[in-house]
Length: 197
Image (cartoon, rainbow, N blue to C red; front, side):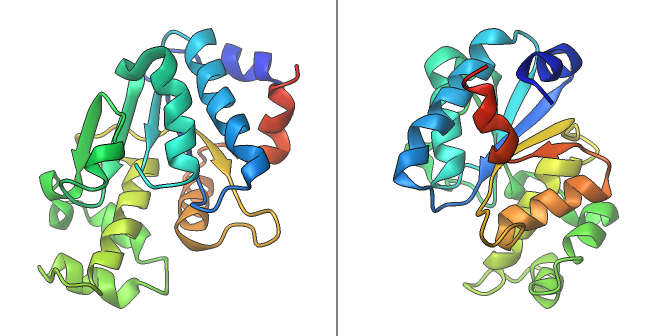
């Protein structure tokens, strides 16, 4: 997919593009993430950009969008106050504001992450400790992709992944949720080329 093809297909009303990825970003790639955020925000007018407000890729992508138009930057956070000082978004939605128990699809798809399945049950039942909070991150990642009754689902996902160990951790979970829900995704193997088109 070329950059022009992407813009033509996705710069539409109600289009939500995920910009996110691994916390560990190669030093040589950091500026590329910022440049992509700037490029997307400056060459589109309708799409909204969504992130999880994590350090690393989320932060660098968000920096690029913020430099052009932060009014189109939305973050979904695992709890109120998450990385508050580095949150560049115009709109922040915390899991604390969402009735997770009422959204069985979010719970069901979050539990596909077998490493945190039991923690999700604990989190849903009200536990808030250093173990169950790990579930909040996975639930947040699911919501970023499929949304809730009040939050629209993503229409496309742009990721910065660890190409040596692809689709692992929270980033991998989000990518898999996108794929299971027919939300197209790309990683840097594609979008690095956009920066030179």
